[in-house]
Image (tube, rainbow, N blue to C red):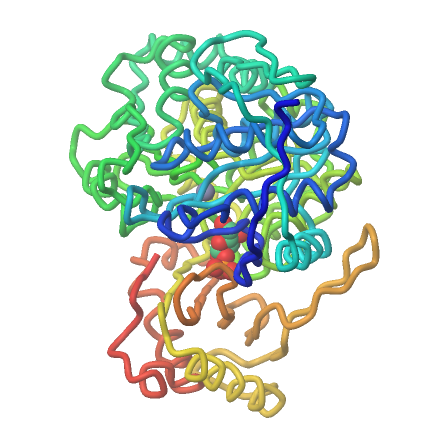
Length: 543
Ligand code: G1P
Ligand code: ZN
């Protein structure tokens, strides 16, 4: 019997957050570390037994080793069928889609998103449930508990799966099907967008530059943009996924993809410039001469989406996370659509999507997606923009300025203070929390505080309540200052400060973000005193 039960020692640190279990590669390389965590999943999520499981990862260092182990343990734990992307590759949205179309009981996504990769970099595992969404907190909590007391794991030994050979193989009673990593994802996108129209746009001279940042979206972007839509070869850059992401930090934002902003500012810039992150769920959008903030991108897509084939029957509802700017709310109001404000993290959208209350949702952290999957989807957002440009015949610049003229403009920035001592970070947040009640009614320049509170959220679908989701100081529709602690950092504590200012008058739509937000930054400084209390000169990252 090649299924063996082997001893393991429990690890006390296998608590997974919204982003899964994320640790240094060297941590995952400890004896039975991966096995222990995987066995905890198999022990707790008993619905997997006898069912289908999807496995794939972002291609980073340690991906193949970990995927072989995961497949052998699936076979050791009575999984009937494992579907794995060729070479172990699946982007996060592609894996979510596979879970859905194969009615799988779950999926193992091996990724640490945009975190640096390589022998000294990070590794991670996320468990997604039936339906394609991220594991809820109650479930990750039970998996964590199980991981702390495990003494054995089950694995199929004696034969290894060939991850590169397409087709079926067996490990004992388990069928392993290696599939093309891109096929089903490309079909999904084709069902949502007008490929004919986008192809035509390229033929008429439309130009795109998509930066895969040497991460997982390379093969996806090449297949769809170049092979299927006919864009020239040069349209996809850094298209070869590398185990160390080329030494880069595949997080598409104004810091790590600054070169794209520089490209956008050149006179001969392509019409659409975009990038995705390590595992393909984030997106960044730029046009010739301008960067579209994620909150604006969400609002602009909301205003155009019903012109695209997959959304012609109309939008069910819109949603954004609380710190994301309120641009999408303005579109929702104008169009009479439901608009939800949820806590940070994709899982809150998934409930609304499952209940058919939502079509389009997004976060300020470069995440956008729709009802087609249960994860954010980087390439989806890029294709949506390409289709909007093709169907309207307008430039990104025109779409943006017309949008601002019609709905007003939200200037927006996020300041991150990384790796603060936990006590310092908590002290800053606690101090502001205590002063909130005294702020209401306060006058700051032209702005009056209309609301100052800690955000909590009651899920309209299941009634569950999430408390302590960030502090907000609201100046009516005119502005907001938001402060929250990051839930995903790996070292110390990270404070995020978000500034949002809304203007409608025609002569106030063309400011730079920095100029527009300077007065609000001064108010935030006066009220929160982050620099002073943290001993920092300024934020570590501004996006
Ligand atoms: C961050 C982002 C959040 C996103 C999450 C996972 O979480 O802010 O929008 O859902 O990463 O990608 P945070 O560190 O702020 O808790
Ligand atoms: Zn990601």
